[in-house]
Every structure is written in C-alpha cells, then in structure tokens.
Length: 231
Image (cartoon, rainbow, N blue to C red):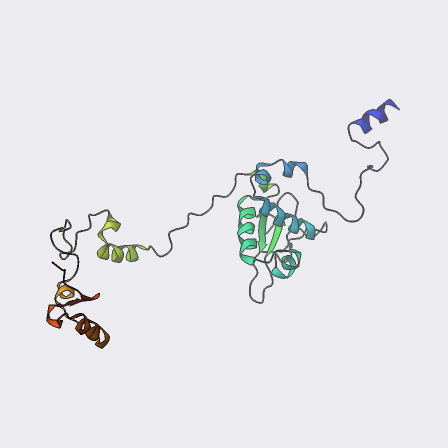
C-alpha cells in the first residue's frame, strides 16, 4: 500500500493501471525533452504555433508526410502565406522539422518531418534513411544565410559611384553655380522681379485718378501698385 501511495504522490500510476489524467480522444504527445530543448525555447511563439499545426497532422505512422499547404492552414487562421513560409524557415533553421519532399506545380505540397520522431516509411520521399537524422533538434541550429542588399551588385555600385562620389567615401564637389557662402549683399530675388512693370487694372486706375495720383508716379511690382510716401 505504501508503494502505491509513493507512486501516486510522484505522479506515476500504479502498476497495471492506466494514468488518471488521460485525455479523451486522439492526442499528440510532445516530449518534455523537446519542450526543454534550446531549439524549442529559442523559437518565436508564432513558429511554435505553426509547429503544433504539423503535430496535429501526425497519426502515428505518417511522419515525413506532414504539410503546411494553404488549404490546410488557412481555415485554421493562417491567412498570410508569406508569414507561414517565414516561420517554416525558422523551424527548419532550428532543426525542429526537416523537409522530406519538394513539392511544386503538379507535384503536390512540400512534405516535412518532426525531427524528434522516427520516419517509418521513406517511400515517395526525397530523402533516405541515411539522410534523416533522428533527434536533429538537439544539434546546433543552421546558420541563416546572409542576405545581400537588394540591387547593390558590383555593376550597380560602380554606376552609382560614377554619379554620387560619396558612395566610395569620396568628397562630393560643389556644382559651379552654387556659391560656397551665401552672399548677403545681394537680394535673394531675381532681378526681373524688381524691374518688371505690370499693367494696372482698370479699377485701380479709376481709384488712383480719383485720389489725384498720377500713374507715372506709381511703381508697379508683383504685389500690385504702391503709393509713394507722403512727405
């Protein structure tokens, strides 16, 4: 009796009896070794959620034939394929999954395998038993490829350097028409603004004539007629 109490105290069922907290229906067992691994803890929450979608497809004999097809994940809330592809790459980088078949046009979806489970059937897969590493999630993560800056090939860089010298860390010369320092003695306006005389509207002509001001004494600019200063 004492042995049964100790066993139940540590969460272990008594010999010959089923565990007390068994889920109803089909379920997928996720080992504690996976949950405590660096591969799992280093994954983003979204990548873990996508991994559970793959676990949901496992039946006990189809590891290596799990898919992330849009027809499967979109009804389950994954409405952005680009996000699923990005998270899939993260899971592969963490070695939690491995691609077992390359899909495409007239070839069906890509297939994947959970690396902590064995693959029982390699028929129709692009890998063999020698290529598959059971427990690969315990290995060092795959280094992400370094992405080059889009468009900056050596040819494009050379052409850009010919137009803008600062690309090659050279001092950009000033264009001849731009002075080194602002000339404060000259007006920022162009000369024709001051010299141009615009026609006086007919209404303003009548107003000036009524006020006794001659048209020859009125300086006309962009802003309209200006009255001379009274002494």
